[in-house]
Length: 202
Image (cartoon, rainbow, N blue to C red):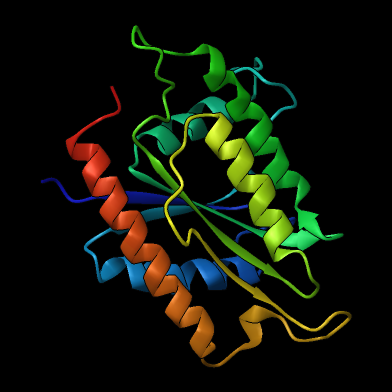
């Protein structure tokens, strides 16, 4: 079977990819875990650096970067949907991506399958306040509605103390619980993606 490929989306509010991001740090933890299952994360896209226009179609006209990003996403077996918690929920950048995926609902093949059918999505969430469970609920409901398959234990997250001053990117070593969860996320996602690649939904 061909090697599985994953694409990571960093939905930080920081548009400059050179600026350190806790979401990147969490994606890096997952990258190591996925490597143990021979899954290659080919790229991490800093979504805020792209011109993703408002809308719910797959192409919102000139200067819209979504068509290219959409092609990249669908060329992979696994989507790592990463982002920070703001005001107790996923970032506005992440919501923009979910809104653009709404177009999948009307882009079905002759069997009624959306472009995302047979592909797996997991979450990488960071924040300094509560909201990881609500953020993953927002992500997974929207992703499932638009054809993505969600494995068991699909979210790897870290939440710091409310109003605290320590970010996930500040850790010299990954917390044990995060490392353990990342291994479960990667193992389950790789297993499921392999099954779906071998046998697509009817």
